[in-house]
Length: 485
Picture 1 (cartoon, rainbow, N blue to C red):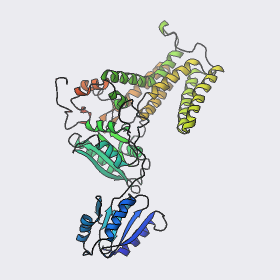
Picture 2: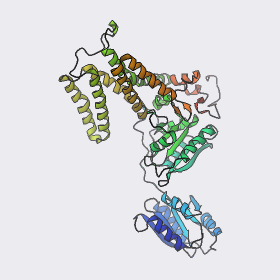
Picture 3: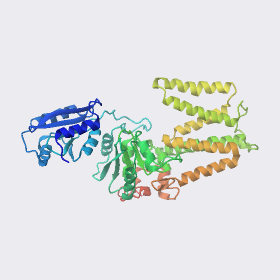
Picture 4: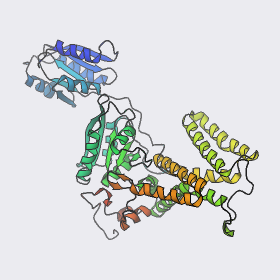
C-alpha cells in the first residue's frame, strides 16, 4: 500500500516510540524540492558521512517523483557506497534497528537504506587465553564485520564466503557463516545454516554461547563439541582445512565446527616453534590433560589400598590428617574452584594478593594445624597445574567434572568403582559427535595417517592433504614435492 511521507512517519513514530525513546532521531529536509526525512538512531551513524549525504540531498535539482527517481538518486546523487532499498516498512524498521539510516521521500513508496553505521568497538588485542611467544597480536572483537576483515586479511581467496543470517525475533542478531566454497563440504555448510535458521527465539543475549546450545543441543554432556577461538590465524587455518566458522555479532570469538577431542589439546604456540619443539609441547600438554583427569583418583585409590608393592610404598600420607583423606581432597578441589571464581570477580590490582592468601597462607596453615596432609595438597596442586595446561577452558571444565566422577567412583566402590567410572568416561567420549563427526576421530574410527598428524607436529611443507574429517571437496592442500609425503 502506497503511503505519503506523513503516514510513514506516523507509523514509525508509533511503532518505535518517538519522543519516548530518547535516541530516535527524525531529521526533515527537502530533496529535489520534495519533503523528505532521515530517520536514524543517535550514536549509530557516522556524523561526517551523514553531513556529506545531507548536503548532497539538499543540493539535488528537481526530478520526477517516480520509482526510477529513487534509483537515480541512489546512483547519481548520494556520495556513499553502501546503499540499498527496502520495499516495506517492516523491512525498513529491521534495517533501522541494526543501525542504518533511512531516507523517506514524499511520493515514493520504497525507502532508501544508507549504511552509515559506526559501532563503538575496542581495539584488536592479543587474546589473553591464546597467547603465543611469536605470531600476531591481533584478536577478534565484538563487531562481526571487523572479525570478517581480520580473516579476509589472511585468506585472499575469491571462494571465501560469509553468509549473513539473523537470529532472534526481537534481537535480530547478525550471524555470519564462513567457509571456502571449493573446500568445505556443501552438505555440512547447509546443515549448519539449517540449524541456525531453525532457531525460534526472542534473542540470544549471550551471543555465540547461546547459539552453540541451540545448534548443537548440548544438555547433559559436558564435553564441548565446538571449538572457540579468539585468534584470526587459528580461524583461517581451520577454514583452509574445510571447517565452518560461525561469527556472531557482539561476540569476540568465533565458533569452529565440527570439532574433535584433539582440537582441544592443540595450541597455536606449537606452530610458532620448530616441528620437534612443537611436537614436544603437544606431548607435554597432552600428558597434563591426562594427568588432570586420572592422577588424583588414581593416587587416592593407591593411597587407601593395602598391600601395595614395595616400589609403590611411598604413595600415601605418612601421617593421616584430622579429616578423612577423601574429604581432604574434596575440600581442596572445592577450594581451588572457589579461588578461581573469586579471582574472576576480583579487580586486577587485588587478584595477586587474593591468590597468595588462598594458595599459600591458607594451605600452609591447614597443614600446620593438621587438617590436611602435605601429600594431599601436593597432588591437588599438580592436578590444578595440569588443568591450567589445557588450552580450552570449556574442555578443562568438562575434564574437571569427569575427574569428580572417577574420584567418587573410587571413594565409594574402590577399584571396581574407578574402573566403572573410567568406562563411563570413555563411552561418553566415544559416543559424542559434532555435526555427525565422531569425537574421537582419528582414533575411533581409526585413521592412521591422520592420527600421526595428531601425535606429531608435522613440518608445514609435508602437510600436502587436508584432514578427511570435514570431507573437503579439494583434498590437496598443496602439490607434492620431493620433501612432501
